[in-house]
Amino acid sequence: EEEIEEEEEEKVTGAAEPPTPLLPPALPPLVWEMLLSRIPPTDACRLASVARVVRDASRSSHVWRLQYEARWGATAAARVASRVKPLTPPPPTFYGGAQRVGGGEGSTNFDGSGG
Image: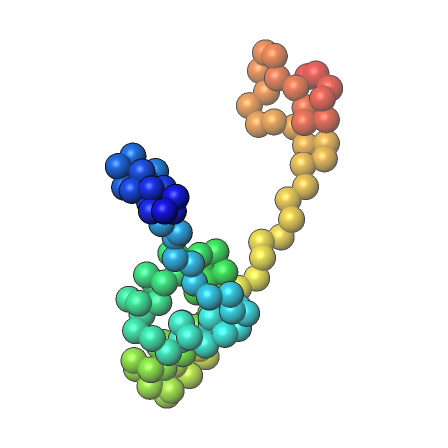
């Protein structure tokens, strides 16, 4: 009887618990990559906005290579892959002891000395 009263009170006051948001299942990133490579690209993009692990998996070049193959064929994908240069990180930039360009009044060197 008390439970019924509590339920009625929740209905009246609207104090019911908020709905739990739906989250994607906890799968390893490789599984997400396989899934994303096999669904339509528009669905892969939508799914990537759901959770961080899915977004990270969607950034894999493997996912989009397989998407390209599914759309255009393996021969076309191989042709494109042979033309693409591998991504290399830019060389590190060192600023030790370099002076600012322009100089002038109030300018200082990067090492903190005036001049």
